[in-house]
Structures are given as structure tokens and as C-alpha cells.
Image (cartoon, rainbow, N blue to C red; front, side, top):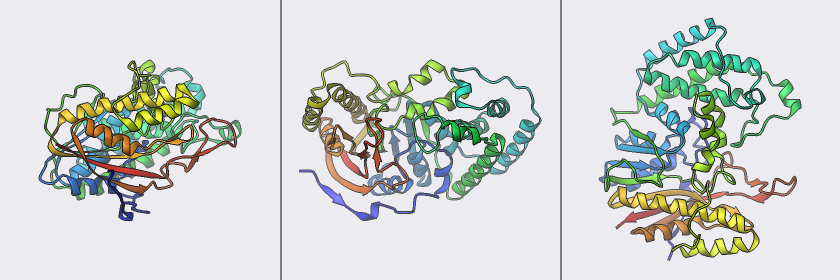
Length: 407
């Protein structure tokens, strides 16, 4: 029997817009700090080691630092690692402010820097923006390691803000011609403002800390054996992807331009969405030991066999992550997952039930499932899955917090 809990105290309406470092950089993160904080406080017990296997922008790592616990963050996306490291590194704030002043002075005095060359750079950026970004990057790269990470994260944010991409979404869509003609961002001014805001938030964050251990952040695929020690994790708090990147949140597309500007391999960057959960069709047959998944894949297959394969591939990959979590967690460790129930071909997939069954298949007992509203600013209430104008369907308005325990 699935224990469902409806508790309005988990909704945190209006509370998630200003909270220490969490507004530092934009990334398609689904975990808000208040949820992460409460899950840690209510489920860690006497444990000391926390893991977020899909760490994204580092929310769980930040909350782990606030309570002085060891933490590990894992993500396959290099941009997520950069952002998480920039938010969880403890800086000397006065030194960071001085470095910012010197950096901005050098940028303003630098001229004729060769810009990187990658496919369609002129399509996504205006020429004056390319020149300004090149000047910023050239000078940031000269900084020492810890400061470089901070300013590179700031730079990655400005790459997207100064680009020709329509803001407010996760996929790469260029501004229409009319809006593009009127769009003339002041790239250096955007960078200055973001650096100033980010330093201020870090200063607020460090005021609440008491010499916490530094998180260990790994660029790693959670479907594979982890370098983290077996049986060492006392609590998992995470928000795995809600589905494959092609049809839900396009993490790879969101990161692509920033990573290309940061010098990452262009082919690998473009293939990032294929590297994520469900990005490649699973080799094995989709029939699994998870009855709810089997039921819904069969239903979807009757309407669209290809979409059924997409769905099955995502959950098969997620099950591989469960295999690793079962190995990494200590006995009696809690596993807390925040997940949404997406709709495919008119069927709302009960991911909370699928996770429960997956956990049970890997030696975990279901503790409870809590449902909370998804704040409207985080995800649209309707979308257009067919890409046909006027044809929309309801997206996720609630998410589930599934809590399990390794036995």
C-alpha cells in the first residue's frame, strides 16, 4: 500500500526567491532549498554523509554545508559541476572583491582578443557581444584556480543572457527577427552586475556557516560504478530528471552555448542530451521487474511505439542509478527523491509509484510519499508537446517527494 501524505507545509509559497547562494546562477534545477533543508533535517538522524547523485546547481550541497555535514555531488553535465563548485567554495570575500575590481579593470583595457570559433556562433551572438565575451573570458582564464571557478560560473551565466536565445526557457530558440533587431545587450555591464550580486550572496551565505567540510563534487555518470566508497552514504537527497532531455528539460541544450564558450569539445557538448538518462534507446527489452512501468509503457506503445521506447529507456537508465545507490548507501540510510509525474500521450506516468517499486527491487522499503505544489515560476502549467500551434497539454503542477529506506 502506497502511503501518501498531503502536507501543505511543504509548499513554501513565496519563500524560494531569495535564499543565500541559490539565485547565483540559472540552471534547470527542480530542487528548491527549503525542500532540501527539511529533508536533510528530518531524515539524516545521526548520519554524517549526504549524497545528491544529480546535483545540478548544488542546492543539496549548500544545505549540507549549513548543517556541517559531509556531502557528495555527482552530475554528468560539466556546467553543473562548475556552478556547484562556485557556490560551495569558501572564499575570502575581501580578496574576491579586490579580484573583481582588478578583473574588470583589465577587461576594460583589453583589446583585440581572438574569439573562439564554433558552429553558428554568429547565429547565436551578435558581433559586439562576441567581442565582449572574448575579452571577459581571456582575462578570467588568467585567474588562480578557486577565483577562476567563481568568475567562470559568472561568465557562463552571461553567455546565455547576452545571447540571441529567447530567455525563460531551457531549449535553444532564437529571438524572432523583430525582437533581435532591437536587442542590444551591454555584455560587460551584465557581467559586472552579476559578479556584484553573486559576491553579495556568497557573503550572506558564509555568514551562516561554521567551518563546514567542503563538498566533493564529481563529474560522473550515476549509471556506472562510483568512486565514492560503498556503504558510506547516510542520506540521499536528490531530484532526478523528470524524463529524457529531448521531451522534458533539455539540460544539454541549456548548457551548450556556455560550455562551447568555456572551451569544451563541441561534438561532446552537442551530444550531452544523448548522454543523459534516456538519451539513447536502451539495448535491452523494455520489459522490467517494475509492474507500474510495464503497464504504462504498454499503454503508450499502443499509441506510439517510439515514444514508448523513449519512456522505457529513461526509466531503465534510472533503475541503473538505483543499482549504484543501493551499493553506496549504508544500512538504514534514507533515500529522498523529488520527482514530477509527467504526461506522455495523454497518460500521466505515476513516477512516484515507479520509484517505490524500483526501490523495493533494490532492497529499499517505502517510508512515505508527500505531494507538494510546483511553484508556477519553475515550470509552465501547459506546453505544446506536438509543436503544433494551439495544441497544448497540461504539464506537471505537483511533484512527489518519495522517501525510502535501505534495509
